[in-house]
Structure formats: structure tokens, C-alpha cells
Image 1 (cartoon, rainbow, N blue to C red):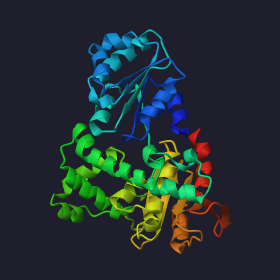
Image 2 (image 1 turned 180 degrees about the horizontal axis):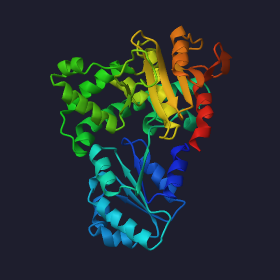
Image 3 (image 1 turned 135 degrees about the horizontal axis):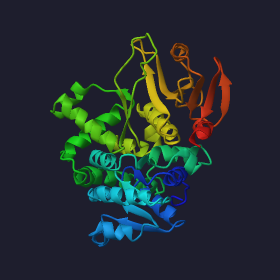
Image 4 (image 1 turned 90 degrees about the vertical axis):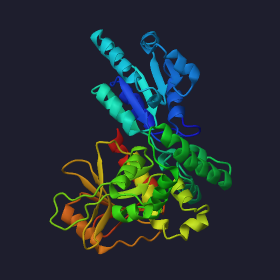
Length: 395
């Protein structure tokens, strides 16, 4: 459980622990990693250590001796990026267990995703670690009973404390504090030396360009930095799972296509706070309305799929586009168009693009609650029903 909600990712964590010595659960702060880990610990013999706690850090003053004494338990290490020298110790313990033929639960490490954390763990624990990325609450976890409840999730976003706040004012205040704390405290603590005001300006710029291929030079000029620095800052926001980079599809097509990635602020609630959208009435009348819904749907879909399924967007030089392509295999490619509204209008270009790419299924995810077929073997479907369509691929 994540508070009142069963997190879909819990099953994946448990299954991965059965065959992988170390599972790294990575995601932004406050997204629910610790709550999920503590829920898992209730059903298994385990030790939980918070590496931001001086008391728990003291226990790891001699990590080899302490961890070896608890090798029959699931060891949960929270905020592991605080003690990167642990990775070498974990490797020694894991290799010793392997030589002795021991199997079973070993280590669940939690961290706010960072370049350094991934680099250190991948180099030291190569072949011994699996990464699982955790985002906010999604529709299939919240199970909204009506459109109003769905709209609350869209407006407030999926961070549990924002979504479950007693009222809108508390949710807004939580998100504003989250943004401020992340920029001024968390990012520097993760080792990045970036002026907080500059990173905030970039984050706000991205929110205005939600779901667009951006011009690095234009942003660089606005921030008074060079394009390489813009690219570096974007990499940081992507790596911290605060922004999603969606790559373009340009294989197997003779068309002139866009080859620049699109960027989305991943959490819809954070997006709305960055844009000072604090009420549903303001959201539906704002020009960002459609792109906000597009990003919300995209995050729900991608959070419901295993990492082996690749995601792209498609756009030609003439403006023909597909919002989301899901590549399940070399023979199976789904095209998904995302539309806000109860009577979605599909442009002819969507169908011609589907023919060009030889897609196997076509969907239009809209903000209604039904599922029905329209022309060209296309299915119009609600987000909740779309996620159910995808369940079979997450087994």
C-alpha cells in the first residue's frame, strides 16, 4: 500500500528482488519510495536504514561487519547516494554469497535518481543490479470513481502529499514548497552546482513548451548561457525524473521528420504550479490545457509499461504527427493520439502516418469514460480503459 493506494510497481519490485541481488528504486523525493519499501519490509525479515539519519549512518561505520551480520534479511538502504562507498561493500557481500550458493532477498536501495548514483552503481555492481523507476500516483492506482476525481488527479498531480491534501490550498502550498526545496536544497545536495534561480527559469520555460521540440539556442539566449550548458541542465532535470525526454521516431520512413526530442514536465501538478495554474477552471481555459492533458496521459501510460517497451513520437516536416508510438517488438507498433475533450477530432495526417509506419493498432485516448470504434480501425478509449489494455504487457 502507498497510504490508501496499492502501488502497481510493488509487484515488479518483489519479482525483481527474487532474481537480482540489488534492486535500485529511483525517483524524485516525496514520490513514495520509502513508504513502498517499508510496506515491503512488513512481509519479509528486513533491516531499514535511512542514510540521512546520523544514527543509521553510525551503524554503517563498519559496513562490511554490519551488513554481513544481517545477510539473511532484506537490507533496505534509503538515500543511498549519501554513502556511495557502500557500492563496493555490497559487491563484496554479493559475490561472497554467490560463491556460497546463497540466494534470495538481499538489497533494496532507494535514491533520488542522479547521474553520480547511476554511474557509481552501474560500474561497481554491473551484472548485480536492476533499476526500477518510480513516479507519482497514476489512474490505475487511484481508481477515480468519476470525472471529478480524475480531474483532481490531473490538476494536483501524482505526488501523494499533493494529491491527498485536504484542500486545494494545501496542495498548492505543498507543490510550491517542493519546487523551492528541490531547487535550493536537494539539487545541490545531489552534487550539482547550479544557480537555483536559473534552473527554476529553465523549468518554467519547459512548462510553457510542454510537449514541444525546443530550440536550445533560444533558451540559451534567454538564460544568458551557452547551448551546451542548456543541454547539461536539461540532462539533470531528466535524470532527476522531473522532466521526460521523448525521442522522435525516424526509422523506416522516407519522410523528412523532426529529429529533436520533445520535453514534458512529468508531474502535471508541478507543471501547473510552475505556470501558476491553481484551479481547475483556470486550467481548462488555459492554452496549455491540451498539452497538459497529453503529458498526464503519456506519464500514466509509460508508468504502466515495462522498460523493454520503447516509446517515441512522430512528426514530419509537413506537420503530420503521432503523439505517442509504443514499440512492443519489431512486428508490433501502436499509435496513440491524445485528445482533451469528449468529441475528439482526428486529423487525416494521423491516419496517413499510421500507414507510412505500418502500425498494428491505433488508439485515441480522450477525456471521456467510454470505449468505441471509429473509422480506419481506430479505437477511441478512456485513459483508465487504455491502461487496462496495457496490463497484459506488464506481467
